[in-house]
Image: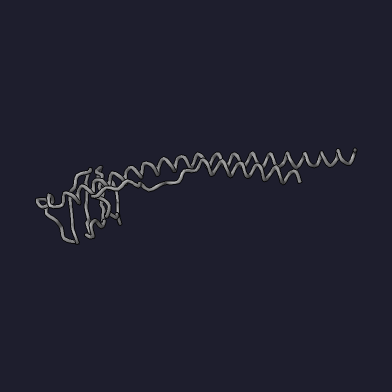
Length: 155
């Protein structure tokens, strides 16, 4: 009976510790008038011959945009499936600013995700070690229960 209390207590402490050390990702509640209506539906980053090529397709203010950036420089822009000439890009300064802001947010979130994944891996290792220690303690508790029974029998 005592073993069950000890096991339950240890498990409860372990669960509480894990719950308190886990940090959920939260959405940015700050809103910006330019990007309120942006929704990224596709964001791809690849390395092409040493150049960072980023392609985004998204909806902004009810229009479909596709942008390609090479080493953070806009190289292609399409609006509603129509390719926009570089000379006309200034007509889409707000959209381009929204693209750049979204890219910055995506990169920041990517950095946070990598850090969280690293922390999760560390926590998983700690959890495995704690589980191993819990098993050892459980065996010790069982041995103690057996000794207590033997002592009770002798008494």
